[in-house]
Length: 270
Image 1 (cartoon, rainbow, N blue to C red):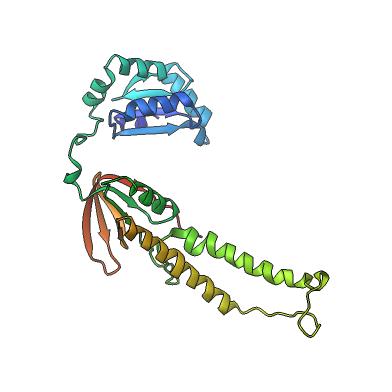
Image 2: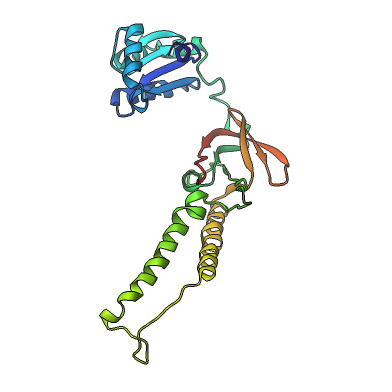
């Protein structure tokens, strides 16, 4: 606990559902705090131990509890009172917790927003941001091959190897299952005999893969193009708060800068 307090300029101990914690977060956020650690106690298995440890330090069990530059500020009312007296920003500046580049013009960067991750969330965020006039948006997405060498296109796990193919295969299965009940509902072949079917796995997988590649993957790329979202099929890593390093499939590296960077990496299927 002391390491968390000592190694971060601003620390907020909170709970995810707490409206007073959100209020404090907004008050700090409007000043451009960039070095802030939020510890949501209700997401920890040692929640009660954490609260008890805080009580030993601050004398309080309630949240939020705000620390600036290792010093306990107080709870929501204390933090808001500092803000209303125009003292909060000064304490944040003294602690070195504020963005030193808040007033740089947008033209200082290659993009206004760079989204790292081309899954459902990343694609939606990039396209939504692109609706704002004048906003320059980029999105990077890259799939490292699986142990068997499998890769897939833009759209993430859900579109390529998760929800969508799973649901289509489920539909295929239910179609076959429904044929068992055809006779009960009066359906027969044209010669009056029972309808009998067989399944071809290769045909199904080819059709599903074709739908994903030609409709969903390509549709997303077309959407990026139509909305002026720059798409990078490259592995992206953060170099600093405004710089992204992009590595393509051949190992070539480039960099791009952005005023804001959104992390939407998601996860891989197991």
